[in-house]
Image (cartoon, rainbow, N blue to C red; front, side, top):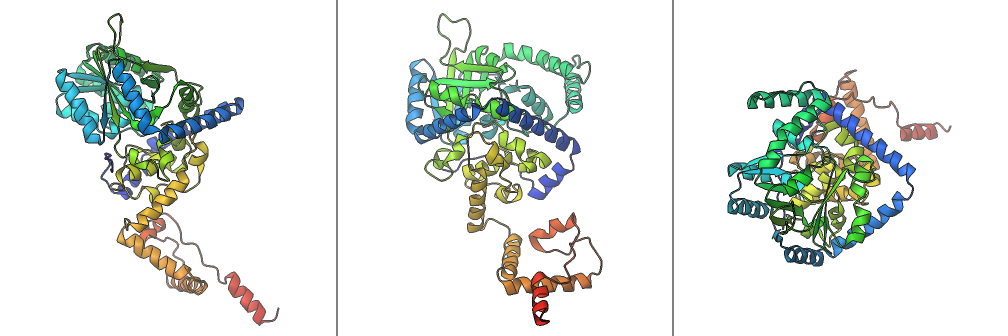
Length: 481
């Protein structure tokens, strides 16, 4: 069953041009992603045993995906035996309906959330908003983009495309609307203090907490969250109702598996052995507990994931959302996450978006946003074959005729000329004629047809050699040299 993902309906050239013209975004994303990559490299060099641990983690995660139906049942049984409630949502809209029903039953008016990509995937905030339920993101990056009415631009750092001056402007506008004291300056400490003070009362007053989940331990029915701010601790312990919405692929078999895998997101994403906070939820609050939710609901989201099991794309389900592939991708560094148009940007988004939706949205991703440099393959801690998958997806796009008519015509024409030696020679002869016709004009704008027209808008036409090697060789032999 094909899943559903929200997407940017602007055409690719419009998304691309908007990104390339945003110099602040390009600078901040380039700086941060390079910094993450360098720190990761230093940590790996200083800890040679990390590679062995990573290899074990890959094997454990692959096994969990293979055994996923069985592990899902074990997890659900454990959660329900300890007083929690579980639901399996086949589609995004099913997950939203379940969450809304829980909110209605408990007369929820306000919700606090920790960072969650899957809730972005199912557009939970928008659904709550239509019901009149106030939602507040409590991760600092998510809080910033919520104020800006934007989508995350990076899996790990949602607001990485904004600098501190822009964040200060957002906080100033927020303070003016709420008629409260603004941050004292655009210093990072002052901005963080302002966000902390704004969020404190919302933590205390919320009726429901919503989280995602980094891992699900089938052996004990435990949800594992890793964060660097500690906000997940308050989201999971203060409101009376807790709803955890997690993709089914986050399952691991037992604590032994978790021990190896839990190091990988922080290690590969930001170059740390572990994230600052690890939060584990095992059950709702018992009668003798001082904190914790009175109700715990776990919504397990399929939305196209289970259909990938048993296919050559199965290893995509091993993704741990570390962001390492984004950090090394030269395309992502130039255009940022919003240019991809999908909730999942970067190399993993290029692969996941068409696979989860059966190419119903953004079929241009595999062709337009990858140079096949293979940097993502080397960076991925879960050893996902991203470049090979992107090539396979390009083949599928062609077989299904998902390219525009102009792209098809251009490729066929190019293949007709360059598919044979004689055709190649004719194309060179034609290029020489065109070169003489247009004289010394070097700007290629308007001269190159089809899908290559955009190439000519930013480049000069290379001069055709007066004589090819084959022509030189034939002339030399004729002269008996």
